[in-house]
Image (cartoon, rainbow over all chains, first blue to last red; front, side):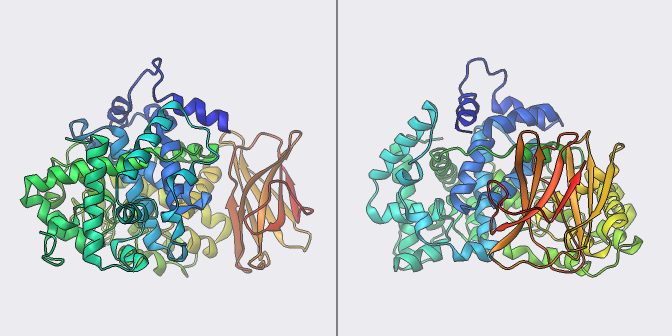
Length: 198
Length: 330
């Protein structure tokens, strides 16, 4: 299983990879099922990893992952490469879907706050990751250390926990307006640390 | 800037990128995006930043069955035409500079959100329908439940061109919508196939908006529609009628059991593919106690596999821990 994961993820950067995700997505938009299969192989572990980070339950995470890929299939024609990479497009969709699932299910409400607040490092304990993933992880982890403790908590609860800003406010016992500020300032700081600019 | 209470829309930029806003705030912020180029750039950057957080998460390998299911669903899943209708999707398409916008626009109101429960009304309405032409007709009116990605929000891209297509079952109207034709027919086929087997209970389950159940229904319909579809009937240890249907070509199967007893919350029924290599879990399910409990098995079926059902601790076991209540030879 772990071997498989490594092989699959390594495909992301393999020089032998015949097509980029963007090219594949372009073909998917025209109904190319084999391109869809290839795209799926390249990015499904990323999508499921993220969804499972939020939902925890594996079976439910696979369901949501299926929804996400059906949506990729349905709306591939709406993807515009000039606006960003295919991974960005798909992972944004994935996060949104996972959050929607949490908001819509009672199970989501019962989740413990620690799901969101636990350290990135904890989730990484027993993971065999590729070089690419490791580098990305370390970069983000390092950037996270530049945030204030409260910014970090708020961003983690919202992004990794899937909690709404009002839920975050309740958990951290701070006013909603303060949460908004922290989320925005925290993300801006992360943006600058990570060198994200359009 | 930030001490203007909650009034300043730009304050929402962070929460928006993190999908932490409710529908109302999301709409307010998107209205702000339309007005402000600067806000769109920030939204795009913060969205990319959020994605960086996502890319830092450890990948998880999906089960093989997930891809099998997906690939099987493609043929019957409509695709959007290349260019969205600009008028209808103006509010979501206009702030085009932001990469955040397209996915958000499309996923704003998936069938699973609490806010979209209105969309499930016609679905639930069918719950008690007997399996019949009437039920099948009703399916035609709810075809977006499993396939649409959010039919309920006017500003939303996918269904904007035919906002009430899901509500009205006018054949003409539906015929105009190219990409809805196949799913409607497909679901009709699914309903017809399902009706043959299990009747009303099945429909009640199949019409649920839950995509997992929709996927299950599709898979069952595919088995039944396969040209090499086979079935084997037997009884459980307690005498309930049990049926296995399968297709060697599709390499999938489903188990259906009548009046399977309800289990306690600490137990699940678990399915197994059993062959010379041992037993492989094929998923868990539970039963409401009456009607037909059924499930399409996870994973790949190999010709000649045995299929068994055991009672296991909640969530299932790695290997069977009890004797099967029923077993089939495919």
